[in-house]
Length: 363
Image 1 (spheres, one colour):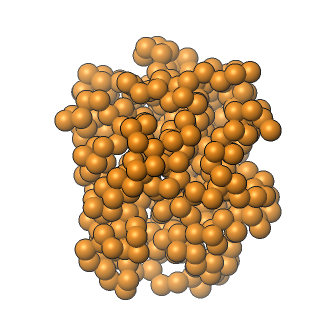
Image 2 (tube, helix red, strand yellow; image 1 turned 30 degrees about the horizontal axis):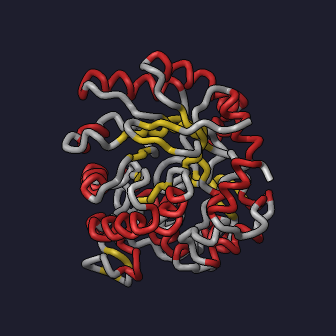
């Protein structure tokens, strides 16, 4: 089967593959720029941009970490990442992922639009007021992430009533993705919440609002998976973990190595200060956290609203900003390494070009 291009708003994505946004620093300029160059949709993560280029864009550091949301979500860092991605992909479509649960959500969305993002993708919560922050940028496509037809319906109703606007596309994320889930622990295991069973109802709901393209995500790994999702009615797929296994991925080599060494049983759900279960690789950190011997929690970055300045971090046993940034910097001892359920299937590091060719041709 040959794949059709993917239309999102005014933009055409030549190949129906969206690279998932991964922070801190896993999908920044090199990965996102190269994916867009090769005909997919590259997605820059806005999380932790204060760490970009050895924290040169964070105006204030405490204990060598960006202080507060203003520096952790550095506007200058995000602008630099987008500018450097553009040097790679030119004027091809480029997206920025901004989590709804973060502090300074509205500012970061506006920062991304100012810097020239073509699309904003938002998950980790129901982004009912997303269009409010892009009013001055009508050409920027808006893509919420949902985990059910009900969630899509709520967003469409609110957006239409309040802003006379509808999503330009929607990402449907099933419970096999890396990082934060849109389900409780129990819901992640239920048959009705598996991606293959969610696509049809979400596609049907999307059609009621004018054929909003649905992009299926969470556990998509190869050409066969892509074909299965398209056959169910999706217009494209989003893949995160598989892109970690590329030379251009901005992750530290140690991060890539953690995944290359991971076995299937090492990839598990865990608690998170964000308030949703998160999926990652069991490492030294997870063992320390379980024994309540993890690193000290000081809440320097104030990254996500649900954490209440470190209260939830203390409850689950780790600070997510500190531990994800440690992983970005290659710290195997204290780093938190997110991965989808298929991360153990990574067995080599290849170029983005080669990976996209494999996904399109099934080699």
